[in-house]
Image (tube, helix red, strand yellow):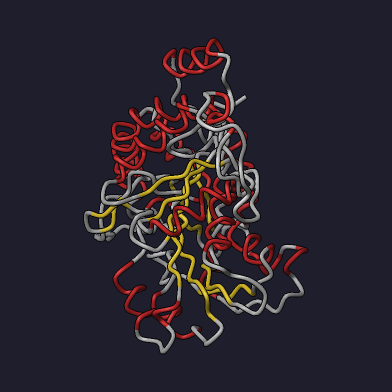
Length: 380
């Protein structure tokens, strides 16, 4: 039904063959492919990244908070403009979310000054999101944390779901904080349907993550199958957040494609900006971005206050163009409406006017031009 979908998979026979190989092997739970994916992803990120493949990005976030010891009575600072997973995991572990506004209408990432203003003695972690694949100002954020009396005890967690392949001043997103969390959901740059990665430079937090992923067990099913162990101990309470071999095998293929796919996304974004530059009633954020190489996960625009977003979305749909919203405001969700969340006026306003246009690695320049032509006619 769509002439231009919001997202299309960057798949070919390589992913099909990778999945078939696993099925023929008769071992589909976590095993050697998962280990290879962890190792390859760690090499891709560089530095001293220890990687643990998990069931999804939310699992990685949950594990990060548990590994950091976050619980009842603690506060976790999160951006106001992000997916609901970030606030959900904070509440699930019993902590209190503290929202911080966007830096500006040009930079939609979390404000370092806003972080500094809300840190208290109860702050246990700061969770940042590299929105749309543009890295936050990590130096300013780290400085804001260090400037407080308990800064040395605050964990800096990166939600890098938008940012596989992005960097901040040469250092891979997801490796800058204490723990990095990636998502490999269907619409992500590296897509395996479901899946994620828990990343840390800390051997201690890496070990905690391994136990949390698989019931706190000292050995895996593969170890017992291959005769390396006959039983297991349970070292700590844990969960079942394991990744299966089929997704890991597809992830290895997707990882090889990722650098070129991200470069293609960058070409498409540049064309979008050329066509929308100066168009009245449309504002494109991150135009002056200079902190590193983005991954260009999505292409968001801000509609003028005089436009009705629903009408624009319907108009695009009538022309066969799919669009989306990133993201609705937490304050308006039923689960959080009565939670007395902080006021974040810039993020709240953006959430009312943001529109996400199609962007994917196999998209053509002609499709970008068609989307922009239709959008300009709708807002004229």
